[in-house]
Length: 184
Ligand code: ITT
Image (cartoon, rainbow, N blue to C red; front, side):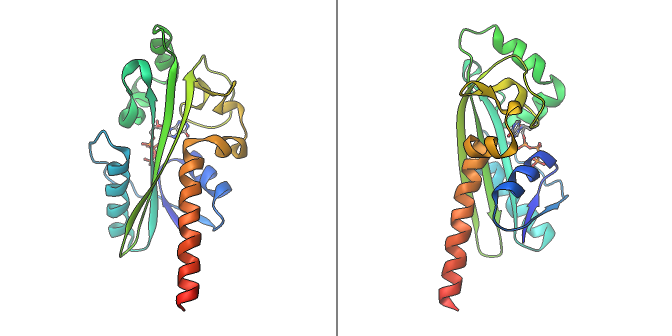
Protein backbone atom coordinates (compact mmCIF):
# COMPACT_ATOMS: atom_id res chain seq x y z
CA UNK A 1 0.00 0.00 0.00
CA UNK A 2 1.25 3.49 -0.91
CA UNK A 3 0.47 6.62 1.12
CA UNK A 4 -0.20 9.75 -0.94
CA UNK A 5 0.04 12.96 1.10
CA UNK A 6 -2.10 15.53 -0.70
CA UNK A 7 -5.10 17.81 -0.22
CA UNK A 8 -6.17 17.27 -3.84
CA UNK A 9 -8.70 14.47 -4.53
CA UNK A 10 -8.16 14.84 -8.31
CA UNK A 11 -4.52 13.82 -7.93
CA UNK A 12 -5.55 10.81 -5.82
CA UNK A 13 -8.04 9.67 -8.47
CA UNK A 14 -5.32 9.79 -11.13
CA UNK A 15 -2.72 8.01 -8.97
CA UNK A 16 -5.20 5.26 -8.02
CA UNK A 17 -6.03 4.62 -11.64
CA UNK A 18 -2.37 4.48 -12.60
CA UNK A 19 -0.42 2.74 -9.86
CA UNK A 20 -0.51 -1.05 -9.46
CA UNK A 21 -0.62 -0.91 -5.65
CA UNK A 22 -3.55 0.46 -3.58
CA UNK A 23 -3.17 4.17 -2.75
CA UNK A 24 -4.31 5.61 0.58
CA UNK A 25 -4.78 9.37 0.86
CA UNK A 26 -3.14 10.96 3.91
CA UNK A 27 -4.46 14.39 4.82
CA UNK A 28 -1.43 16.26 6.10
CA UNK A 29 -0.79 19.77 4.83
CA UNK A 30 3.01 19.80 4.57
CA UNK A 31 4.64 23.24 4.37
CA UNK A 32 5.76 24.06 0.80
CA UNK A 33 9.18 25.67 0.50
CA UNK A 34 9.44 28.67 -1.82
CA UNK A 35 11.37 27.70 -4.94
CA UNK A 36 11.21 27.93 -8.73
CA UNK A 37 12.03 24.24 -8.85
CA UNK A 38 9.10 21.82 -8.48
CA UNK A 39 11.57 18.99 -7.78
CA UNK A 40 13.01 20.80 -4.78
CA UNK A 41 9.50 21.63 -3.48
CA UNK A 42 8.32 18.04 -3.87
CA UNK A 43 11.47 16.52 -2.31
CA UNK A 44 11.28 18.83 0.72
CA UNK A 45 7.54 18.09 1.07
CA UNK A 46 8.06 14.33 0.90
CA UNK A 47 10.83 14.48 3.52
CA UNK A 48 8.68 16.56 5.84
CA UNK A 49 5.61 14.36 5.32
CA UNK A 50 7.66 11.20 5.98
CA UNK A 51 8.87 12.67 9.28
CA UNK A 52 5.32 13.61 10.27
CA UNK A 53 3.61 10.37 9.20
CA UNK A 54 6.45 8.01 10.21
CA UNK A 55 5.80 5.72 7.22
CA UNK A 56 6.94 5.81 3.57
CA UNK A 57 4.93 8.42 1.66
CA UNK A 58 4.77 10.20 -1.66
CA UNK A 59 3.68 13.69 -2.66
CA UNK A 60 3.08 15.38 -6.02
CA UNK A 61 3.89 18.98 -6.82
CA UNK A 62 2.55 20.32 -10.10
CA UNK A 63 2.16 23.56 -11.99
CA UNK A 64 1.03 25.20 -15.21
CA UNK A 65 3.84 27.00 -17.09
CA UNK A 66 2.62 29.59 -19.63
CA UNK A 67 5.28 30.41 -22.24
CA UNK A 68 4.11 34.00 -22.89
CA UNK A 69 4.45 34.69 -19.14
CA UNK A 70 7.95 33.13 -18.91
CA UNK A 71 6.55 30.11 -17.10
CA UNK A 72 4.22 31.91 -14.68
CA UNK A 73 2.27 30.75 -12.66
CA UNK A 74 4.53 27.64 -12.43
CA UNK A 75 5.17 26.91 -8.74
CA UNK A 76 2.55 29.55 -7.82
CA UNK A 77 -0.24 27.81 -9.75
CA UNK A 78 -2.28 26.94 -6.69
CA UNK A 79 -2.21 30.51 -5.36
CA UNK A 80 -3.12 31.93 -8.78
CA UNK A 81 -5.98 29.44 -9.22
CA UNK A 82 -7.37 30.47 -5.82
CA UNK A 83 -6.96 34.23 -6.34
CA UNK A 84 -7.67 34.71 -10.06
CA UNK A 85 -9.44 31.55 -11.13
CA UNK A 86 -8.76 29.72 -14.36
CA UNK A 87 -11.08 31.88 -16.52
CA UNK A 88 -9.09 35.01 -15.72
CA UNK A 89 -5.83 33.19 -16.36
CA UNK A 90 -7.23 32.25 -19.77
CA UNK A 91 -8.38 35.87 -20.41
CA UNK A 92 -4.91 37.23 -19.58
CA UNK A 93 -3.22 34.56 -21.71
CA UNK A 94 -5.54 35.26 -24.67
CA UNK A 95 -4.10 38.80 -24.96
CA UNK A 96 -0.71 37.34 -25.85
CA UNK A 97 0.35 36.18 -29.32
CA UNK A 98 1.68 32.86 -28.05
CA UNK A 99 -0.78 30.41 -26.46
CA UNK A 100 1.79 27.68 -25.71
CA UNK A 101 2.03 26.24 -22.19
CA UNK A 102 3.08 23.10 -20.39
CA UNK A 103 2.07 21.22 -17.30
CA UNK A 104 4.79 19.79 -15.12
CA UNK A 105 4.59 17.44 -12.15
CA UNK A 106 7.13 15.97 -9.80
CA UNK A 107 6.23 12.93 -7.71
CA UNK A 108 8.53 12.60 -4.68
CA UNK A 109 8.77 9.48 -2.55
CA UNK A 110 10.42 9.41 0.89
CA UNK A 111 11.21 6.63 3.33
CA UNK A 112 13.86 6.20 6.01
CA UNK A 113 16.72 5.83 3.60
CA UNK A 114 15.88 7.73 0.44
CA UNK A 115 14.05 10.59 -1.24
CA UNK A 116 13.42 9.94 -4.95
CA UNK A 117 11.84 12.29 -7.47
CA UNK A 118 10.10 11.47 -10.76
CA UNK A 119 9.26 14.21 -13.25
CA UNK A 120 6.77 14.48 -16.06
CA UNK A 121 5.82 17.26 -18.47
CA UNK A 122 3.32 17.71 -21.27
CA UNK A 123 3.07 20.49 -23.86
CA UNK A 124 -0.23 22.12 -24.78
CA UNK A 125 -1.95 25.45 -25.24
CA UNK A 126 -4.25 27.71 -23.27
CA UNK A 127 -7.79 27.79 -24.69
CA UNK A 128 -11.29 28.92 -23.65
CA UNK A 129 -12.68 26.59 -20.95
CA UNK A 130 -14.11 23.38 -22.34
CA UNK A 131 -15.18 20.12 -20.70
CA UNK A 132 -16.22 19.25 -17.18
CA UNK A 133 -13.85 16.44 -16.21
CA UNK A 134 -10.54 16.64 -14.39
CA UNK A 135 -9.73 19.43 -11.95
CA UNK A 136 -7.83 22.69 -11.58
CA UNK A 137 -6.65 24.14 -14.90
CA UNK A 138 -7.79 21.14 -16.96
CA UNK A 139 -10.65 22.98 -18.78
CA UNK A 140 -8.24 25.58 -20.24
CA UNK A 141 -5.34 23.25 -21.12
CA UNK A 142 -5.58 21.68 -24.57
CA UNK A 143 -3.36 18.84 -25.71
CA UNK A 144 -3.69 17.46 -29.26
CA UNK A 145 -7.09 19.05 -29.92
CA UNK A 146 -8.85 18.29 -26.63
CA UNK A 147 -8.68 19.86 -23.19
CA UNK A 148 -7.72 17.65 -20.26
CA UNK A 149 -11.25 18.29 -18.92
CA UNK A 150 -12.64 16.58 -22.05
CA UNK A 151 -10.62 13.42 -21.36
CA UNK A 152 -11.38 10.50 -19.07
CA UNK A 153 -8.93 9.93 -16.19
CA UNK A 154 -7.40 7.10 -18.20
CA UNK A 155 -6.97 9.24 -21.32
CA UNK A 156 -5.47 12.09 -19.33
CA UNK A 157 -3.07 9.75 -17.50
CA UNK A 158 -1.89 8.31 -20.84
CA UNK A 159 -0.49 11.70 -21.92
CA UNK A 160 -0.31 13.95 -18.86
CA UNK A 161 2.56 15.33 -16.82
CA UNK A 162 1.30 13.32 -13.83
CA UNK A 163 0.90 10.12 -15.88
CA UNK A 164 4.50 10.46 -17.05
CA UNK A 165 5.80 11.06 -13.53
CA UNK A 166 3.69 8.19 -12.12
CA UNK A 167 4.95 5.88 -14.85
CA UNK A 168 8.57 6.51 -13.79
CA UNK A 169 7.57 6.08 -10.13
CA UNK A 170 5.81 2.76 -10.93
CA UNK A 171 8.89 1.50 -12.81
CA UNK A 172 11.13 2.42 -9.89
CA UNK A 173 8.81 0.68 -7.39
CA UNK A 174 8.71 -2.45 -9.57
CA UNK A 175 12.51 -2.55 -9.85
CA UNK A 176 12.88 -2.03 -6.13
CA UNK A 177 10.38 -4.82 -5.38
CA UNK A 178 12.22 -7.16 -7.77
CA UNK A 179 15.51 -6.27 -6.06
CA UNK A 180 14.16 -6.97 -2.58
CA UNK A 181 12.62 -10.26 -3.78
CA UNK A 182 15.95 -11.47 -5.21
CA UNK A 183 17.79 -10.26 -2.07
CA UNK A 184 15.45 -12.20 0.18
P1 ITT B 1 -1.34 19.33 -2.78
O1 ITT B 1 -2.00 19.23 -1.45
O2 ITT B 1 -1.01 17.97 -3.37
O3 ITT B 1 -0.16 20.26 -2.83
P2 ITT B 1 -2.53 21.25 -4.62
O4 ITT B 1 -3.80 21.23 -5.41
O5 ITT B 1 -2.21 22.42 -3.79
O6 ITT B 1 -2.50 19.90 -3.77
P3 ITT B 1 -0.21 21.71 -6.34
O7 ITT B 1 0.39 22.74 -5.48
O8 ITT B 1 0.69 20.67 -6.91
O9 ITT B 1 -1.35 20.91 -5.61
O10 ITT B 1 -1.05 22.27 -7.55
C1 ITT B 1 -0.76 23.46 -8.16
C2 ITT B 1 -1.96 23.95 -8.90
O11 ITT B 1 -2.01 23.33 -10.18
C3 ITT B 1 -3.32 23.74 -8.25
O12 ITT B 1 -4.08 24.91 -8.51
C4 ITT B 1 -3.89 22.55 -8.98
O13 ITT B 1 -5.31 22.60 -9.07
C5 ITT B 1 -3.26 22.71 -10.35
N1 ITT B 1 -3.00 21.41 -10.96
C6 ITT B 1 -2.11 20.48 -10.54
N2 ITT B 1 -2.17 19.39 -11.33
C7 ITT B 1 -3.11 19.65 -12.24
C8 ITT B 1 -3.66 18.91 -13.30
O14 ITT B 1 -3.27 17.68 -13.57
N3 ITT B 1 -4.63 19.49 -14.03
C9 ITT B 1 -5.06 20.72 -13.77
N4 ITT B 1 -4.62 21.49 -12.78
C10 ITT B 1 -3.64 20.95 -12.02
